[in-house]
Length: 490
Image (tube, rainbow, N blue to C red; front, side, top):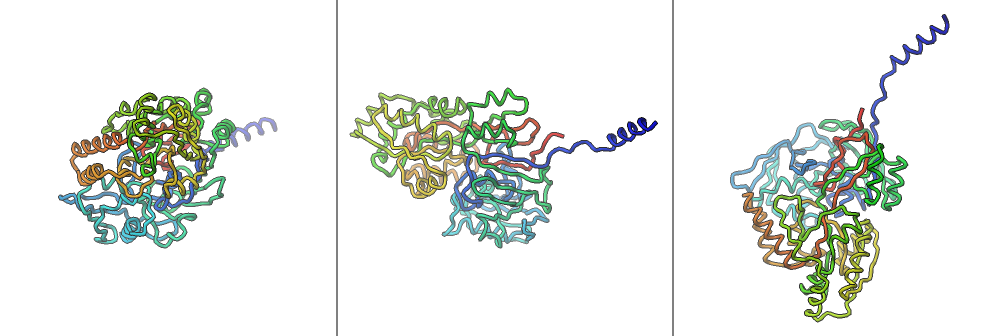
């Protein structure tokens, strides 16, 4: 009788116990640690990989399919002449410090980004703005100097997020945004933690905590995945192990595209790289497939200009710089260049370090020696990107539709071409899709014909995650680890 009572009690207790809830925390890994957490004041993609759509939001945003979607503006109207955009802000939005978000914050954020002393890495996004004015607390009108059909897209960049004026002084280390997650802690050299923001205006995320760990070494990345120490590695740095991971039922592999044009960048102002024939020789010396196979284990799409192959306006110009060592030698001879040694600066990413060794060997085959310097990320940003103190470097430009960088003053390529600038100016003003397509193709042709850089491959997005995780982006139309839709299977 007593035994039967125990059995009944145990069954009753079992039936009364709720099913185990899905986890509400996640640990993701990244190759690079961001130098700071201010997306409006730093060029590193690693900043957006932590904060975009998670901590900070803009008037608009990019969705996982690359489309422009409403953000803090729930809608917008365009004037008939295309020179004014009126943004209707969402009601009830607050910053993580409790301050309300309204039109004055939009004015502050956009005026700060376009100010003469602005340190925004994408200042060109805001150059077309004439005025920003509040119609009422929930309505903002942005008047442009000329029509710009791409303006909602520009406002979706991480560099255009909305800021809390009171928090700007500490934004680099203690950011305050309007997103579904707020800043938790940053243990430099190890991890950054975000926590769910209870006062979020939109749909609450399934996750309560997200931790970003920094693992740059491919061997360590593989070990961390296999040991279960991390839940997902959205941009996995060890593609040579993907087949092994894919065969393990504990994991899934996500293979997609990125906006990352991987290039052998050249300092066009530095002799003899100021000679187009020398740049062309370097472009013909490089075998793209060797780099894709040797550095990326077959993951990557060859490119011949600074444009994403998945974009409908992409032009395949790889034939202009096909691998041809003999032609490369002739071009160097025609330019009168002999006994050339160039400095090759390599950031810490695996594609750069592995690819750099291959590039050095292929340049040696045409008579160019290289002095390789392996740099940490902060050093590369300061010396190469900011001060243009380099000859060659390998880097992926992961910002979407960024061919406009070739028209900038004092950009680290040091490239100047009035014809390209004229095309880009027309592009900014064009609203007709067919005209924009034409101009984009012209721009691609110009930089390919000038051999501004040696164009290598479009970076693939090879991610790994535990099988139970859903909602991670397969493609990367923006450098981001958007966690708003990420959850564990129940």
